[in-house]
Length: 576
Image 1 (cartoon, rainbow, N blue to C red):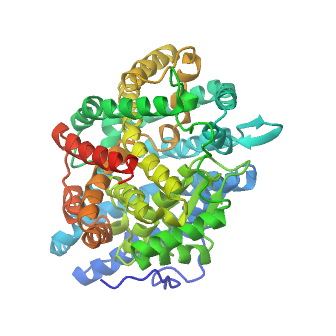
Image 2 (cartoon, rainbow, N blue to C red):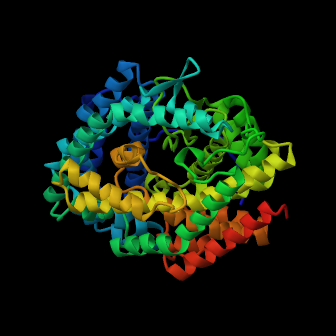
């Protein structure tokens, strides 16, 4: 396969070249023409599908840019207003037409003559959307889209003062790596106290979101929002029972490994007890890892790393830089978190993150870089809908890149000891992230099965689930008043409900690809590219098969993968 990250200005065939999304009256004629167009044969149907795709891409990219600009600067109210205008004044008008176009496609006599392998997953998704569509949900979904963004606005204002200087919470977290334990505890408590100031506002926001989401589910004929969301997310290939199996497997096979990691950390630091502010620290005399100083340096080093894996990977990031598709450094007024946002028309995505010079920022950068590579690999697919790949494979793209890239982390660390520490940190994170994924996912199942719960019930259930997946080695005594609302730091709960177990499923896939990579790097990279290039044109199990992976939740499979990671971690710790 000839790979190139070259992006050309897209040529429009349906919309006028200078058309921009401004308001509904200027957009509606395009939807109306598609809804009313005669389709006399298969060739006309395929042309119609390409025109629908072009319109979807233009509208999607406009909406994405509104969100990107708003998250880059939450203090500019005009950017928030532009996003809200789209969600409240444009998107609600689009949804009935989208349903009309879906029904036109399904009802067309020539649809049966389309290539059924090529269109299978697309048509399955269209039928699912028809099943879910309800006029009554249009205003609710518009409100939910706007409300979900309030989390970012609230969180962006959170800062703490350390040594007389103001820091965002992302920036302040670097002090948790400091050898000075008293400073670590001071900063930890300051960060938690700052979060508590907005606990009430975030509780109220979440309660309102849960209530409206439950109503959406009822309107669509579902007993609860969890069951509705499983269908909306296109979870055709696994069930809630598989999620429960995943939770139990994490407890049985992964939590004991987390305890071992934490016990090793306690011994290394020479502590009687390990406290939450000790997890990222190094012993006295060992400086925290500082892989880069600026966002520009982070990008340059990541490009160098990606080039060594495959020149195409580095070319993708260089193209994004040239196109202004990166905002990497943390600053006040910027929304928290990180993401890669595909841009459906122009092809090159946008990476947003909050780098502060820490090791975790390297992980975030290569993670989002993996997402970006998939955006480039799928850009040439014929329809926008073909590029809407399942999140369970999208996160394989990002998490496998975290592991592949470790082979070349000498670009970040010239000192062999620092390089060893960085790889050790990464593999520890691969293991320790699973309990949090299970915690958040299990919490969401309970929340939406019990949508009228009280704040007291929410808090009690959260603490019960949190303790279930907490390491027995870490001493949390006296900190329950912080832990009771720890779920509020997870933006997915507010912005993208039920999108979280994907990280756990995909981490299993990423470890499987890394197992391949340790045996034959070229073959693993080839499988990686092949699977990602398919976009959403295959079922999830078929995409995993293309990557040479098992789509498997069983305890035995998870145990095998954890044995492999544990072995590799021991090799690094022993300097092998």
